Image (cartoon, rainbow, N blue to C red):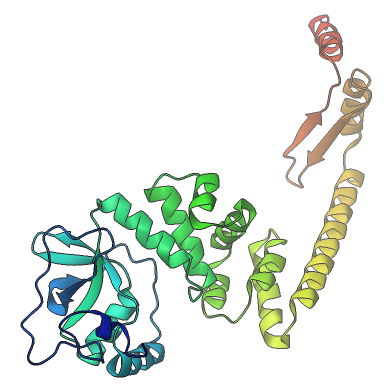
Length: 299
């Protein structure tokens, strides 16, 4: 006890590094499902499906210092590719082990194909707490795009509610500059949800800037978003009212004639250039048939 993983594995000293008097480790050709093998670091390559895009250099160095003193506490997971190995999970530990100068690293070996490896790597990373929200969102999107998972099945795999998965995926619809702020943890998920309540990208960026400049809390950001929405709705209502008041008399005549067949459930929009649309809402087939007969009888 208290000597780290190295004390539990034959051929390693208390620091988790190979003993100078111990021959090089031999990896079994068919390891058991729970067996831990010592694999030479030079035979291991990075995971091409790694979901993590950023590795904190200071945190890596701190982990390397810990490994120098205590060894590798938690083995990495790899798969065998020919005579070499490819990381499924544990790339951060692998990088730190390299920095610490370890010659070998303890690892679990799993037999899996490319898609299985991608799925395991992403799910394992999502379940960690140190991924930023954008990395989690991108990982969810990869599970959908590359592993062909639905949001529901994906939520089951990663142990999260479907609503949580949906909220993460919505982050990818935000402007790039806001995604960078989330990635760099300048704003929280709560701030991002407040920003997402706005649909206009310009307004979204404006609110994000205000959050950063004024240090708004999540509640303050939500209140500001609601105020911006209300102002936008009032402005749109005024524009619609102005547009309606500017309609030529002939448009009112069209509304009057057609509206009588549909209980006046008809609206018209027209731009300053004379382009627009007419929307008719009907409540039954009878209304449509009555209107059809009327226009068919026009000479």
